[in-house]
Image 1 (cartoon, rainbow, N blue to C red):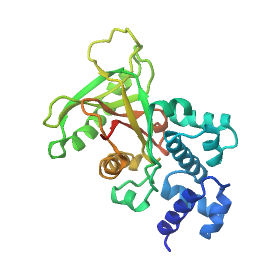
Image 2 (image 1 turned 60 degrees about the vertical axis):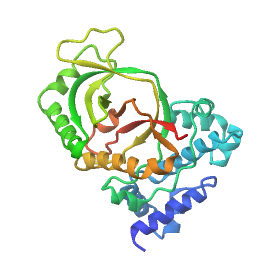
Image 3 (image 1 turned 60 degrees about the horizontal axis):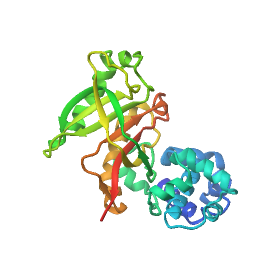
Image 4 (image 1 turned 30 degrees about the horizontal axis):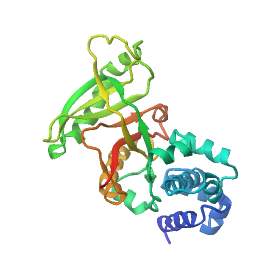
Length: 296
C-alpha cells in the first residue's frame, strides 16, 4: 500500500471507532509506522494533526446526531466526550453556538468520509476539506474597495486574484487597516450578485463600526442575514494558499452540493473570511461562507 491508501484506511477506521478511545500511538501502530513518522505523514497529507482531525470528526458527527434528536449527554458520551459541559465547550468553540441552539436552528446529516483522492483531483495541496459547520449570522456591513467582474468564461478566477494582488501592493491594504472606523481587522472577500448574466461586485473590506462616517474612497455594502455552510480551507503555506482556496471552491460546488441536500440561497451573499489564521507564512486557513437552504 502507498501512503494515500494507508491514510484513507486510517480515516475509515477513525470514523468506525469515533466513540472509542483513539490516540496517535494506536493509529500509528495500526498503520505500521512509528508515532513520529505517522504524525508527520498524516499532517502533511490530511492537513490536520491526528487528534485535531479526530476531534473535528467527532464534533461533525455529533452535530448530525443533534439534528435527529436524542439527549445531548448521550450524544456527547457516544462520541468520546466525558461530560455534558466538556462537549458543550468544544461544540461552542467550533460552531459558535451551544448544542441546544444549534439543534433549534440547523439541520445536518452525518458527514461523508473524506477522500484524499478527491482532494488531489481538485488540486488542493494542503490536505482534505472537512465537512462544513452551519452558522446563522445577522446582517452586517463591509466597507472597502470593489471590483465588478463576471463568471462568464472564468473571468472572475483571474480578475479576483489580480484584484487582491493590487490591493496588497498599491497601499490600499495598509491604508485601510490604519483607519479608525474599523470594528475589527478581519478582512472579507464578498460576492454581491447584480444581474442574472453572472456579473457581480466583489468587495474587499472590513466591518465598520456602527454609525461611523466613512472617509472618501470607500464603499459600503450590506450582507443580509443568512444561514451559512462554512468551509475551512486546509492549512497551507504561502505558495499553495491561492490553489487551496480555488480548489476548495471547486470541491464545494462539484462534490459537496450535489450530495448535501442543500442548495444555494439565491439573492444572498457568499464571502471569504480572512482572519488571524491566514497571517503567517505557514498553516494559512480561511473560511468560506456559503448561504444555503434545505432542498425542497
